[in-house]
Every structure is written in C-alpha cells, then in structure tokens.
Amino acid sequence: MRGKYLKVCLVFAVGLMFAAEAVEPAYAQVAKGPSGLPLPRFVTLKSKRVNLRIGPGTDYAASWMYLKAGLPVEIIQEYDNWRRIRDADGTEGWVNQSLLSGQRAAVAAPWMKGKGKFVYVNMRREPQSSATVVAKLEPGVMIHIAECNGDWCHAEADGAEGWVAQSEIWGAYPGEAFK
Image (cartoon, rainbow, N blue to C red; front, side, top):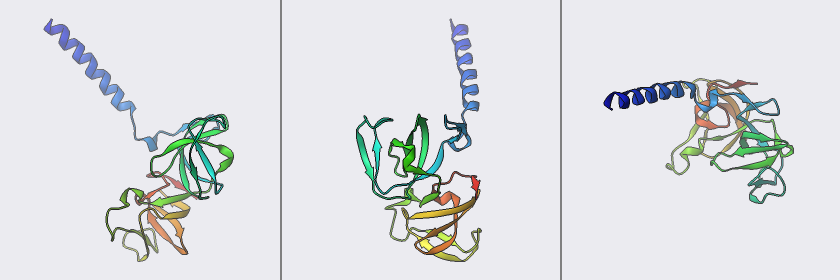
C-alpha cells in the first residue's frame, strides 16, 4: 500500500512540475483573439459615456458607466464585436469595440492611492532614474503615453512632459515597447 501511495505522489509531483513550467506571467502570454490582435492589450475609452455591461451584448444590463474619454483599460477577452475589459481598479465587464481606441494612456501607480500624502510617481526629463524630476504625479493621475521603450514611457500629464518608469504605471506591460 505504501509503495502505491508513493507512486501516486510521484506522478502528482511530476504533473505539477509540468504544469508549473507551462505557467508564465500574464504579460508574457501573448495570445491572439478572434480579431487577430494580441490578448491581453491596453486601449483607451473613445467616448465620454461608455456602458460597462455584464455580458457581450446590449441585452445585458449595464453594471457601470464610465464618464471619461481617454481612460486606459485592458482588453482581456473578445467575443464578436464585444470586448471584455478591466480597468485600473480591477473592475471587469463588456464594452462594444466601437467605444474603444488604440490610443495609449496610463494611470500613475493606482495601487499607491491612499498610501500617504507624500507618495508620488516622478516624471523625469530623460529616461533614467538619475534624470531631473520635471513633475511629481499623484497616484491615480491619468497620463497620455507617446511611447515606451520597455523600461520607461514618454508621457504627458496636465501640460508636463517627460519620462515615467514603466513599473510605476498601469497602462503598459513590463518590458513592452512601442511608438
């Protein structure tokens, strides 16, 4: 009996090893949705008023209404012309693709909201941590992104322009580069 138990444990352990090797961080898994575009991916809301629905269609109830165009969201699933999105707070739901834009934006460290009065994301003149700080962004501030190099993003927020560390924003994946 003991030998049989050990064999079952061994098989289970080997199975876990293979399963663990197959799992990678979400940002490294670039699958393609039915649209042919990568999933997940970041986009922005095109309209000032966007209903977030509990299912992919107008027959489904709206659970939330966004009232700000340009807000960054993450597309995590596609169905026909509907996109399941997630916002910086983790809220998920369905939006018609016509209400989304390929423009890029981000939110400065939303996970740091409420962590203190003197918590900021530094916007720097150059893409390096030793560069001069040109602005201090409060957590939750929305920024427009022009490009990212994998470590830093060139951005604009309320008239200030500079570079923010990619690790300090929600709206670009770690290591993601684009222009």
